[in-house]
Image 1 (cartoon, rainbow, N blue to C red):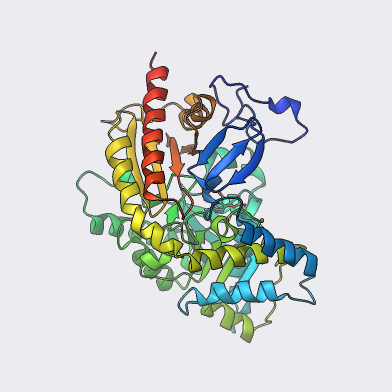
Image 2 (cartoon, rainbow, N blue to C red):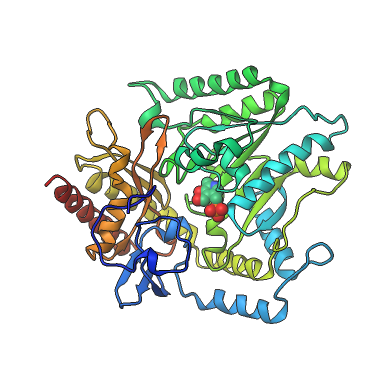
Length: 466
Ligand code: PLP
């Protein structure tokens, strides 16, 4: 099968054709999971896979945690569903309070939904409605500026602000047109040779400023960005000073800053919120994957004082809502996961072991002739593969290199699970895999992950070149 994202690696797995499930990646593995146990996924046939990416950077406390399972069970037995139009639950109240308290006073409210895409839809609509709630409403603010190599979700609004070319392609004609995009901060492919960080930041800030000018500064609701770019680029942090500079541009034109931390947030980069490392705070922030650590579908939006104060002086009502928003089981799972992260000092573990992960990945995997770049932060690392290390020339899209490496690791029983990414962006394909282990792994686990990934990469390219 050769559909988008399909693999060409030979393997023996259940064919997607044998299943009633509408599967997204035709041709990709279709392995049946029996159990999740600590850092391992156990397959039906008994094979154990060390889940070195926590799915798509979702798993943060590992799998099979009884505390979370019991908290969710208790919640479902007590109050399984909450019609949030009239009611609330202690789980929702406590989770929102915990999240607001985690922001050092920067955020004022939290809104709980079920997926990162839903969170982004809510963020987009909150930004739009904010300008209508002002004492002097600004209804002409209808535009969003985002960044080319970005991914903000799969629903139409979120897809429109994202820059994932392959995921957008078929739906361009039905997506909102009020979005334009600027370059991301991408040192490996965006910075010119020898360009100092300050000059690069200045250049990108000017590009953003020019874009505000081009579209009309008073027509822009918000600038949208991921503090560390996840699925679209593979764990790309910005250079120092970038977020301060773009924050300044937003303020100059009165636009909001929306930071999408669905993938890089909730501790993944070593601080609970990735923006804490940038010296700025957003007006609106989305969170997802690591919030519930995969135990329930749960995501959220954190909303800053500027937006909340305006809403409160205005109608006070966000015109939005989902049947399952603030779902009690999701809130209970997220609360327990976050309490475990706090009580077990897991962010400290991420901070302490991140240098080992980064150094060993750079030294041991980065030296391979087909590894162009290794980058990341905390427990969120991307390895980008290239056809030519000197020129950074990517592999042709039809090679499906990232997907094939992940498939190769599974099919040839290396016992490690990593996550693929890529997609044609600005005509440059960036094949990468993501290494994003749970926050409670040990130093020995990290050494094993790096050594195993190194073997996978070496063996894969040796086989490919035959
Ligand atoms: N935003 C970012 C940065 C993401 O990485 C993702 C998912 O990968 C989303 C939004 C969408 O989240 P979901 O897949 O939960 O809808």
